[in-house]
Image 1 (tube, rainbow, N blue to C red):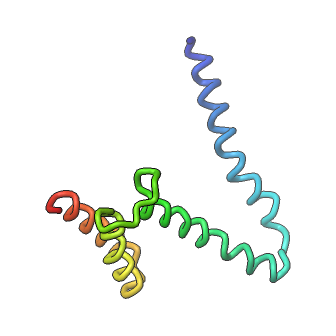
Image 2 (cartoon, one colour):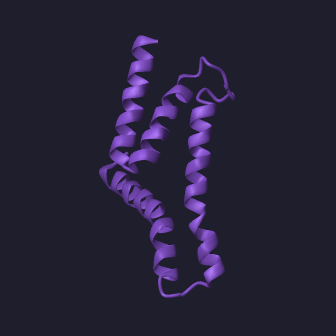
Length: 107
């Protein structure tokens, strides 16, 4: 592969990657959406995050594992408690990292 074709590939992949992110913002930032639609859209991000979290915690190996041997559930519990109590992303991440480190190294 020549140097030119590599640059064309890098630029092409960059455009294809950034276009779906920028285009909707550029097109829809001028419009005012109805209240019901805005309210409905406000639930999309938390729902997706909740679904991804549930999948990561309950099926870490691709198979649902709701047992006492699932370390991810044990790490999730203190992380959730810290998140609810402090409402701090930093402390929540710290609790999750510490919990997983302890579980992987001592259990």
